Image (cartoon, helix red, strand yellow):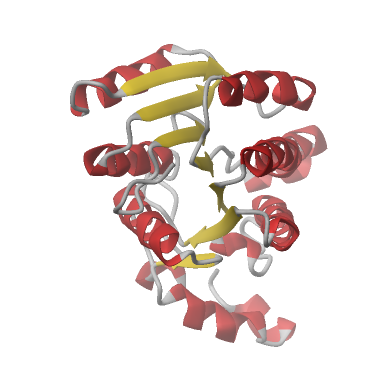
Length: 258
């Protein structure tokens, strides 16, 4: 359960090496979170992430790893069920996803399918499993990392953007389905996040004025949870930017350097 300050005592991150996920974990551990599960494909990076969180936390912080593959939805119920069987989870953060390579993926349809299966199909499966478990325990929050890219398809990344658009719509609908059950669903829409994954990628307009960092997204997630928000934009200015772009006629939108 959350403490008197609204901080979740237990956290499950799907995408255990996600920079946004780990920034959120660091912030919450500093606030009083005492159990963290990092779910991801077994790798040295996953174990290193767990060790670093253990080193940051005070005595009593329990950081565990669990083998989880977004592309293997047939295992999600069993794998995640074992996590919830160990005790209540106050917060689940769906933080996995891949950017893909637009030019390559257009030429190789199976690569495009992998982006869609990871970002959308895998998240649908894991999201439903976790939402059901949270509902069974009677409380908890499910935070889904969407993207501003899902708000309107851009020529530069429409494969990735379409997968995030599907995820965003799914998460909104899931939030409506969970309303009144004690389960809170929050959709987070970051702009261009400076991470290892995005290193070397151009920060094209209108993203240049709305660039963010994993740490800033973590702050927004914590604040959104305290407010019981349903949608969080990071930076907040993106809400206004996308309100305009969403309704821009397509002939004009095509001319933008995005």
